[in-house]
Image 1 (tube, helix red, strand yellow):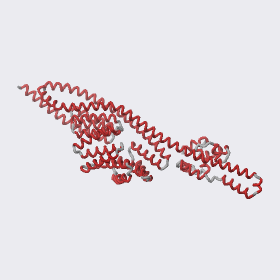
Image 2 (cartoon, rainbow, N blue to C red):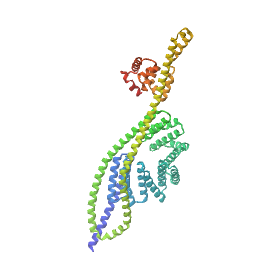
Image 3 (cartoon, helix red, strand yellow):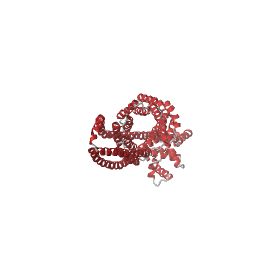
Amino acid sequence: MMKHLILLFLFILSSVTITAQKINSTEYCNNLIKNGIDALYKKNHSTSLETFAEAKKIAEQNKLYEQQFIATNCIGLNYYQMYDYSTALDYYLEAYSIAIKHLKSDREMTVLNNVALVYLQQGKYKESEKHQKRAYELAVANKDYIGIGIYSANLADLYNITHQLDRALEYVKISRTALSIENNPRITIDLSIVEAKNFLERKEYNKVLTILEPLLNTLRSKESMDHRILILLILSQAYQGQNQNEKALYYIKKSQQENLNYSNNKDIYNQFSSLYFSMGDHTRALQYKDSVIIVKDSLSAIKNQAMYQNSEIKLKLQDSEKELKSEKRLKFYIAGFCILILGLLSLLFRTLYLKNRQKRTIAERNEQIISLELKNKETDNLLLEKQIKEKETETLLEKEKLRNELENRNRKLAANAIHIAQRNDKIEQYILQLKRNPEMIKNDQLSQQLDQLKLILTKEENNDDFLSHFEKINSKFISNLKEKHPDLTLNDIRYISYIYMNLSTKEISSIFNITIEACRKRKERVSKRLNLQNSNDLYSYISNV
């Protein structure tokens, strides 16, 4: 009897000690999570990941499932912000498994929404829709109006992207109804932007302006800067749709001035290119297309750098996990020893085991589904890379098309100039033949009229017409040239324009009605005026004006 009382006393004492340790571990773990979230908000991903890894380790050791879920989910958020969507998805699915096994459905719908956003970034719209709808259905079941507002707004945005505009508008209405019951200003802003995107796709530009212009004036804080940039971009597109190009240009320039997020530059430069092309300024359109390619390359480099940093962090996390496994193994031996001592209590644990058996079976099935999804990820990534390459090829083809169109117009203009010069030569030859006629020599009046006609032909009255047509095709070339070299004459500018059009010396001499040698001398004279050492560098120099 005494022996049993001693065993019971030891059991109670050990239970009190374990409970006290668990309380201390919970408090410390919560502090780690708070610090990790602060680092995540400041985009200090290395510190944030290390902090959450430690919190996750403590939570696993002490079976703090709520803290374990938060730490795992936040590790996924870090990788999501660093564009490592594959690793982010791994941690989200791990967090989902924890939520299914141990937590309430509100945690389940949180991670389902995160998984849906990863699939959306990867262009897997069907998978994104499936997970987002599941999150939305859980929010409806729990009467979580904030959740309903968020997830229905996300579904509306997804349907905008996939051009299912009527379905998108239905979810916008659902979200508005939910937010009218429980308001959240940030979600309301997101919803207004989603609704404006829908009307933009429908080409109902007045509705876009009605929604976004009043909203823009309310967004002044640093936290709302990304919203402002997106709104300015949409407003520019709406005014472009109304052919109000000056207003469209104003808003896109404003978005460029205010933008602090480098990843927004791709959309901003695309809008500049589209706008200048619709305005007929093909040179600037091409320049901004080039900028889009540069931004894409830069983002790829940033992503590669992030991937490199991720690898270093993953190694640290793996080392931490190895330590955790060693500690788990030690705990396993201690637990086995305790089980031997407390064998009389095994019947009680058996009852708990039977209650949780069904829940574990469901979790195992979910893990099997997760395993199958992971196997398909690699194939999906290859398809995504192929799609990206196809888009880059389309951009290059569009740029080549614009360049060919510009060259074709220049060729037509050059051919017209040569044709006029050849016609004038023929007329001048006819005049000379007529003047040799004895009857013409006797007739002073006719001879004077022929001289006047020849004088008219020698005047370069078409210079201004040619230069105006040339400047329409080659936007800003002449104005830039005059700005750099104000002492150039009209003939010099005209001669430089023919060189820019890549005409031969023979063709230019024909247009100016001078000899080839005189044309070469003019080239040397113009090169000196442009401060060039060698006349052979003339074409290369003016091509970069």
